[in-house]
Length: 434
Image (cartoon, rainbow, N blue to C red; front, side, top):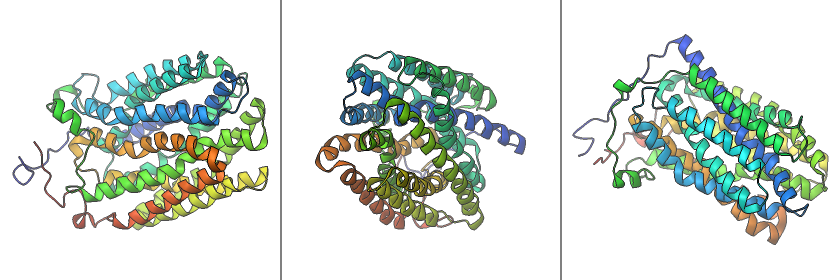
């Protein structure tokens, strides 16, 4: 059966009024802040401290790459499946809210397990579990955005929803700094915040009632197709996916900042904590301003591609500045330049990709495929670091990823701008459905 015979199904949406939109956005902000706090703080600081402790003070760069690479690979495999599960859920509690709550609670308690790990392989297994479980919350949160936010408001809402990516790490680093560095108590504190925030966000957002959800049939072939959206039928989405993937490869280098600062400047655990907190505070401030401004201006001008291109240039410049920084102080200047690019990219690129989703009725599954563009770099880049860091150190590692980001800028030329979807957008070619 093809869409030339049957029109794509129209998703059932809750009625979104201005007041309920505000409540939705507030709930999504809490959920996303919790996610970033729970996942980014370990990447920026706690995993480095944990592995350094497990390895009795030896360099943790290679082990860090192994742990984060395998964990991200787990997220890569399960993201689209989690999205399809959410799409097919008919629970009375809601197809999105059910999994938001499940992911927040189970993922939170998995964080506590990492805090108790005593071997590198323990950290590998438990961090992979954290990545898998929080997938449920991540996909449900993004699907609520796609389900309920109108296209004409997506740029500015996406700009606001970029704030959690900035505030989460800042809040998390500030909280864990109140607990002895490297202790299990830091992980337990994140657990408490993750579970509490998940419960609060669930009761703020609305969802489609169970009796109004049409459950799509799920079989083995359908599950395998979960990982694939045919680029021949949806070329615009395919190019947007590639742009996001290549640029996220370059952005993924930021996860190594803690390891980089530790190795480059021989910092002890307390110095690492304070240094990363300062770096995050700087980054949050700059990203907040650039994200809000670019999201608003993108909607106002009805243009997205120029903002994504400029974001890539700033991110590349800042990353190379970090790699070749002649001094400790210069690293912070480079991080500020990076932050301009990151804030702009976070605000605009997500709205660009959501605009080109192949089928609104499969938003959860399609967002799972889109999230591969974010999670796959988180797997590839750390494992690439295991190979490149011994060969040429951070300059070779960062430089390679900057080149990848520039290739992403070239791919951006093939993405249709707002209003040009019919020349390469979501419905330009009939979608084959079985």
